[in-house]
Image 1 (cartoon, rainbow, N blue to C red):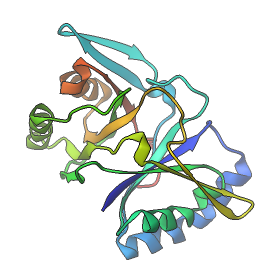
Image 2 (cartoon, one colour; image 1 turned 180 degrees about the vertical axis):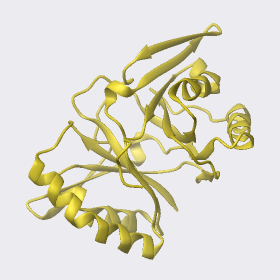
Image 3 (spheres, rainbow, N blue to C red; image 1 turned 180 degrees about the horizontal axis):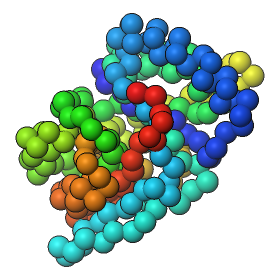
Image 4 (cartoon, rainbow, N blue to C red; image 1 turned 135 degrees about the vertical axis):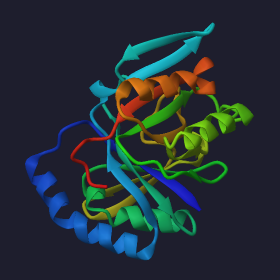
Length: 227
């Protein structure tokens, strides 16, 4: 079963924490990839690099910055292929990142769709206050991305009620139902696409069928983040 594990953060971390994560991360990464449970993991660039796209009455409305103006934000994510939620929790609890930051684990609603794009990557997230319908228009949009070699993976996510937030405190695992960001709106779906630049990523967000009713946030991945 496919899960996304969002990393929650408030920004730059102490140098000692970064050094510890960098020291222990390669061994963790190698173990999880050998097990076949971790398919993707990247750090996102900081929220000021984001663009939020809406389409209203056929007109694109584009604003700089992320959709959610909060102190805590999504700093990156892992893509997992695990037998069940218990295994996803076990995988992320072993991450050196979990010693310092929370993980929100959420299933994909109807499984994950994968492509084979390569190049500079951007994350497109749909933010909504309700669970949107990802219908045949969304299917056609993904197919067009794939036909143009720009689709890596994505699909609708389970609602916030399906989320589990994981923290490690004083060496002990703590689990809580629900997302780590408590907001009226939530990430309802995501797509990772490959584009030559931000303008093309914004153009794909404008053409996203759910941008006509909701908001689509476009954010690049950190250029120095581990793959």
